Structures are given as C-alpha cells and as structure tokens.
Image (cartoon, rainbow, N blue to C red; front, side):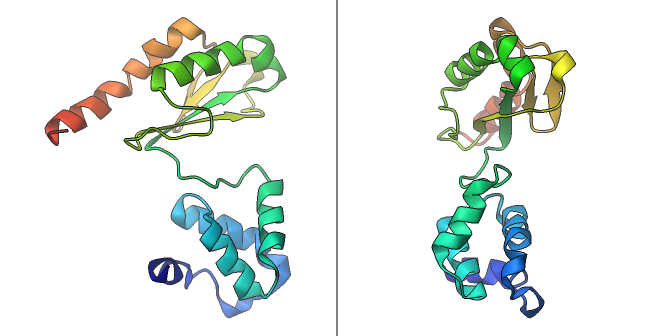
Length: 164
C-alpha cells in the first residue's frame, strides 16, 4: 500500500483535487500501473473526498479502463458487428483454447492476456485480432495457431534461457 502511495504521489497533485478530474486521474493511474486496482480507486476517492463507489461507478462505466493487469502480450479479438458476423466468436474461442486463458483473463506466467473489444475499427478486414500493437486481419480459427507461433517462440525461448 505504501508503494502504491508513492507511485500515485505524482498523479494526485493539489491542482487536480476537484471531482471534475476523476477521469483524467483514472487515465493517469492506468497509464502508470497498467491497470486500475481497487486500492488505487479508493486512493483517488480519498484524495477527492468523494465516496469510493463514485470513482468505481465512473471507472466501470467506461470500457477504456482495465481492472486487471495485461499480459506481456495483450491479445484482443474484435467483436464488432462486422467481425462478429465474419466469425469473430469462433476466433475468440480458438484464441482462448490455444492460450489456455479465459476471456478477460491472464495466463499464469503473465505472458498473455485475452480480451474482447467492441470495435477495433478495421471492419473491412474482419475478423480482426490485435497482439500488442500488431493487427492480424481476416482471422480464422486455423490461423490462430499460425499467428501465435510467431509470438510464442519468443516466450518459450525466454523461459528456456531462464531455466523455467
């Protein structure tokens, strides 16, 4: 908890001590930590002197905020209308199977996280998957393994090198 206070000290500054700064504070905390923990939300609430439930309500209203850390390789599957109609759900299921991660979860080794998003904005390339900043268009369940092979060897090489 003390470490969290130190991390947020540069964010929770006197010039931001108004309720109108809740969203910008949440963004800054997520940028700093990679996600927003319950403790961080409560610290924002205490700082602004508002109920924790208010900060939680605002944070959960917007899907830009994450409440769990991402894996080193953040995998997102688009489930917008075009992607869904082109087989996005099947791609999502294949990705979850191949990574052995539930949607919204993170692998035990912290290497992969898997999320679904409402729209990536590449509808003409549906269905679309992103891994970190790379976009993989026209995904199919058989292509899932093919795409992950390009990421997994790097992970496996690191594990072998570290003796895991």
